[in-house]
Amino acid sequence: MSAEPIIRFIGVKKRFGPKVIYDDATLDVFPGESLTILGGSGTGKSVLIKMLIGLLRADAGQILAFGQDVTQMGERELLGVRKRIAMLFQSAALFDSLTVEQNIKYGLREHHWGTESQMDGRVEEVLGMVGMPGTQKLKPAQLSGGMRKRVGLARAIAIQPEVILYDEPTTGLDPVNVRRINGLIMSLQKKLGVTSIVVTHDMDSCFTVSDRIAMLYERRIAFTGTAEETQTCDIRYVREFIAGGRGTLDEDVV
Amino acid sequence: MMDGFRNLLRDLGGVSLLSVQTFRAFWRSPVEIFPLIYQLDHAGIQSWSITALTALFTGMVLALQFATGLEAYGGSMYTGKLVALGIVRELGPTLTALLVGGRVGSGIAAELGSMVVTEQVDAIRALGADPIKKLVAPRVLACTLALPLLTMLADAVGIFGGMLITMREVGVTSKFFVTQVKETLWVVDLMHGLGKSVFFGYFIGIIGCFVGLQTQGGTEGVGVSTTRAVVVTAITLLISNYILSTIFVAVYG
View 1 (cartoon, one colour):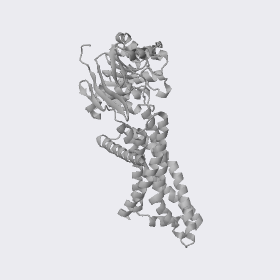
View 2 (cartoon, each protein chain N blue to C red; view 1 turned 60 degrees about the vertical axis):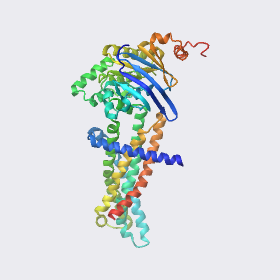
View 3 (cartoon, rainbow over the protein chains, first blue to last red; view 1 turned 135 degrees about the vertical axis):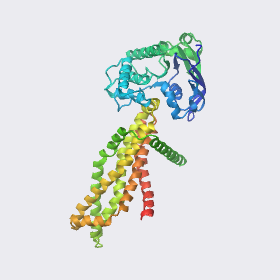
């Protein structure tokens, strides 16, 4: 990775009340790569990506997106960041009261994307990309969990972001949908050249989609490396996490 | 005790901050018309039947109590005056606000609370929109507009209910009753009641939104917020009613 990082977390600290989530977290993300952030449940993986688009505020440290410090921005300046960095939420977070089409147009309208017919065209296009053509008029309640995720993804990519954040994209899905979502993450990265940051504790997804893996441990990014480096890594907690996820715990780990 | 006081101060600060942000949202861009109409329908039009029913029976029972209570002093003839003043200045605005507060305030808190716990509020922000403008502003404005209108309805229906019972209990004609009401009520009395209802509507909207947006911890949290919205709204309405009435009385008499 010779290019300049487009996103940098530098010495980030974050706590909720007495609970410290991050104490000096540092991480670089390079353009066009697919980076997975691994960590156990409740270690604050989602917090990291939510801080990147200003949904949560860091207590200290710098978060640079495209060279500008997100932590110093007001809501208005954050608009510019949110136009370039989109997010797929864990629960998809579709608006219940709106149809699939209206959901996808929501972001387009906010960013003054184009005329009504241009937006119609864009909705059709992104629904095609996630394999759900013709579902414009359905309400989220009529969709399965996997379909909601795909519509959520369509909504996220509609405004043509440069970076997509995935918050546990495969959690709670059946194996077929897990494969489908993983396939989408990879194809979007290839076709659109977007940078992906995936937060997960699903090991299979992790090794399928990632160029690089970052591991959260003890309130910081304790390890980063390629998929191969991660698999051959001899740091104990990395090995344990991977072994646990693969269902092959060593004696000494138990 | 100290914790309770601290929480009270924190909530007061939170509501004040949300109010400032809401006014700023009004200032920056006009409220979107379709969400506003939807909320007006929800808060106003769908509340008319419960408002009218409450007002009708309140007017009736008020007339019954005054007619029989004043009989001992030979004052039954004044029933119309007392019913009209009682409804227009106090019971019309206050009972309407308490009922709509329970119905609409809890609904707002539950809806926004569900949106918070399912990350929909985060999604609004992530898609580049402002939840204050999208969610809070139309609801607060709809409540503020709906309450005076509902109060006017309650006033009319309440006085009508009072008339029915006064005619039966005291034996006056409807013409006498209406004339008496017209002589009794001044614009000041109407302004007193309707003026309060504008504030009541605002409180219902802003408290419902504040409590809803504060929701934490899944579906259980939504239930907690819904209950909390009703309680906080009722207390706020009752206390502010006294304060506002004191001010109106001092200003207008």
